[in-house]
Amino acid sequence: MRRLSGKLLLLTVLFVMVAEVLIFIPSAALFRQTWLKERAQSAGLLTLAIEGVPNYEGGEMLSNRFMQDTDVSMVAQKRDGMSQLVLGMPPLTDKIILADLRGERRLPLFRDSFRDFFGDGSAYIRILSEPTVDGVDALEVLVPQSALKAAMLDYSKRVLLWSLAISLLTGVMIYGALSRIIVRPIRQLARGLARFRKDPRKRTDVEKPVTRHDEIGQLEREFRDMKSGIWTALKQQERLATLGMAMAKINHDLRNVLTSTQLISDRLASDPDERIRGMGERLVRSVDRGVKLCEATLSFSQSAQEKPEPRPVVLTKLLDEAAADSMAEEGKVKFVNAVPGDLIVMVDPDHSYRIFHNLFRNAVQAMQVSHRQILKVTAESKDGKVCIKITDTGPGIPDSVKADMFKAFTSGARKGGTGLGLTISRELARAQGGNLSLETTGLDGTVFVVGLPIVAEE
Image (cartoon, rainbow, N blue to C red; front, side, top):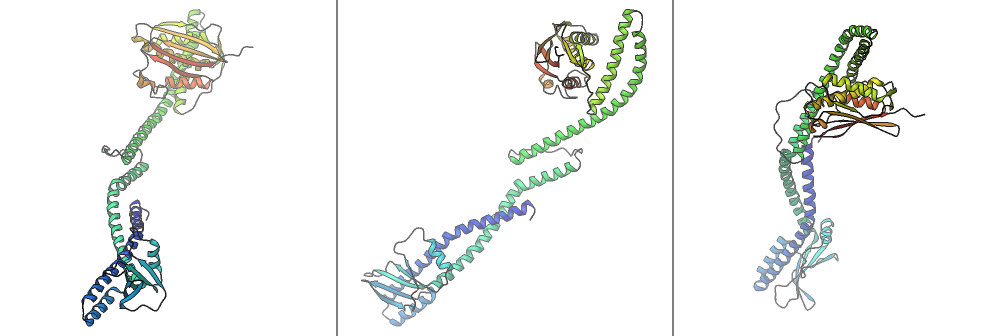
């Protein structure tokens, strides 16, 4: 039996049979005691009948019928230590087992029952019971052990048949109840798992709500939640794959577009006019960062990381440049750069620019709805690293966004955002031996902390 239902039915029948066996042992002992007591009581009534019938022939006929029906071999009355024979003759054997019923036990001895049941039946049982005639000390009845053994065997067969019937009936009832409560729901879950494993992308019809509150109901709810989570993950995976293909095409086309822009920016960068040359140099850097940003997005969708190339960089100049570009894109705010001018960090300038540009741009966007618009940057050196705190006076980050703010494609709080900015920024910081984390956020503003390595002092 490989199926759970068959095993359940078999175990139920087996357990009921074991319980019946445990119950049978004391019941067999009680049956033995009752059987002996009935013979003694019948012998006592026969003694009264024989003494009350003067006709000897009638008494002899009654005695023969009694001995034939009860398997009693001898009945005697014990007076003053002497046995007076009433009917029958004592057997020619010394194998006699005493069973004194005068001191009745509530729980009979199991040992005597096992001895009579498994013995060879060659002995006789001497029953001593209370007398029915006045002046008699005790009534003595002698029965063959074989008759008691045959009665106990017949009783055992009847108990066995009843036990089988009870166990089968109990097994069927328990099987029906448990099949409806446990087996059937588990079968449905197994079929659902098989269908889901065969085609996890296929959604079935609208499922009925789970109303059970026990372990099976919890299992059904967990299975439904698991399917929903996997469907969401597969859908997101499809979107990421589509995004990767789209970014590959955009990257190819954007390179062609930016090539012409780069040629113009190179000419502007070599112009003799200092103002035009500065604008050209900034345009060259912007074009290069645009190309690298596109490539980084494509690399992220393909689970690839761009290896940083660290070199000494003056941190305050990098922060000024990132803040100026961010405010040029999103709007003007008061920028306070409290970083020491001589602080030099060992970082990749392009990667670090992207980190701060993204953080500054997010802060400027958030502060557009605030009365106070102050963006402040401070730095503190410790143990070969610098902790850069970026503080804004925006309305804070909502709790719904804060939980997944560093996850790709899930943390875009503003409309049209991709949700890649903070994810890429943290990866860029960690790739340089640093980190990016959220320190505090609330109605009075938000504080991000960027950790970066600094140049070792000689």
